[in-house]
Amino acid sequence: MAKIIGVRFRNAGKLTFFEIGACFPTPGDSVVVETSQGIKLGECVTDIQELSDEAEGANELHRVLRIANGDDLARDQANRVKEEEALQIAKERIAAHKLDMKLISVEYTLDGGRVLFYFSAKERVDFRSLVKDLGALFHTRIELRQINAREEAKLIGGIGPCGRPVCCGQFLGECPQVAFKTLKGQNLTNNPKLNGVCGRLMCCLRFEEEYYDTTRKRMPPVGREIETPDGRGVVHELNIIRETIRVRISKGEGFEIKEYPLEALAPLNQTDNRRDRAAAEPAEATLDTARPASNECQGDDNGGAAESAEREPRRERARAREREKGKAIKQPVRRKANQAKPAEQKTAPTASRGQEKASQPQPAATSNSVKKDTWRSALERAKKDAEKQDK
Image (cartoon, rainbow, N blue to C red; front, side, top):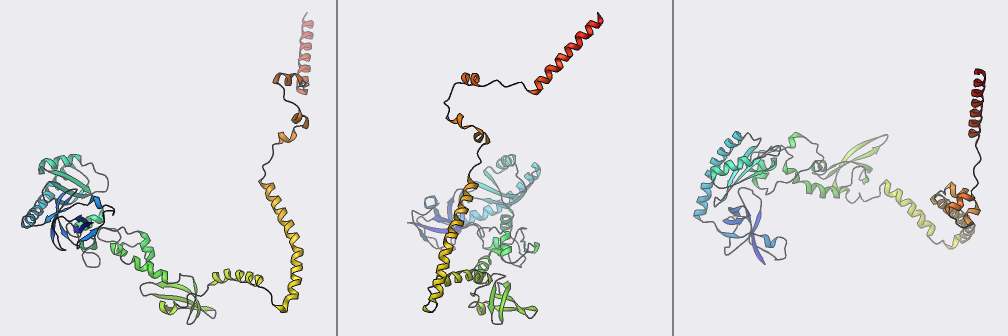
């Protein structure tokens, strides 16, 4: 069993779990941990927990090196000052290279072995020349990371439309993805007022999504016919926040809309609607026909049984005709050549190609060939007559 703690880096960073070593930190302590990017300073935010060795990712956990001392905290403060200087230098180098990118933040690792530059850009940027230039200036390993609009707002911070600091920079470890499906579930339309400082849909829309889903399952859908204290009506509108239902009730030639709390209609909205009653009527009819008759109406049932016995042969004949029609449709159409072959060819033994040609009678001259011969003979006679006249 591995003992782990949850650590956050910087303000409201992503929660990452590390395996504790010989130290036993408590929530609120600053700890020095080893990460894939180098040695960093973070804050312990959870109590010590146990993780089984068979759990997913148990073998990939990094270790907590120690609880931060005074030297570690002083070095972290010095790195903050160096980050401000590096931010200004990097902006100047970006302008010199004429790169279409916006530098957001700079982060030094605790040991100073790596510098991370966070930037945003509309398109992919080729920053290889910039990395070489920055590496020659800072004499350390340089890493550039492109972030999206939500992560940019998280790093910069700000005040949201509600007048409070943005949630992503205050307590959200990860920036959630808010889809338009969330708006539809809360009966909202796409409105610029619902966008946060990042220009995307506000993260707080996700806070109420679970409540909307669970409450909607308890309420009847719009269009369902239900029973109310004032009579039967149709669900017109749902107010999920207040948990009330507006129902359209017929009144004379018109109708009126009344609002009822969910608790008042909960025992009554289990009644059958029109569709349920229509589906139930055939089932009741079949149950009545299958129910055994009483002694009072045995005579009528005997007569009905005789009539049904007479109808059975007719039904069987009709079913047989339907099956024959189905077979006729499914059977493929035979080729006309096979139908036109005489019976003698099917029974006659096979022969070689030469014998078949010899045995076959030669076709007689067609009318077209006869016409050609007569036309040629007339042409020859005309030529001979012309020669005689010339002589």
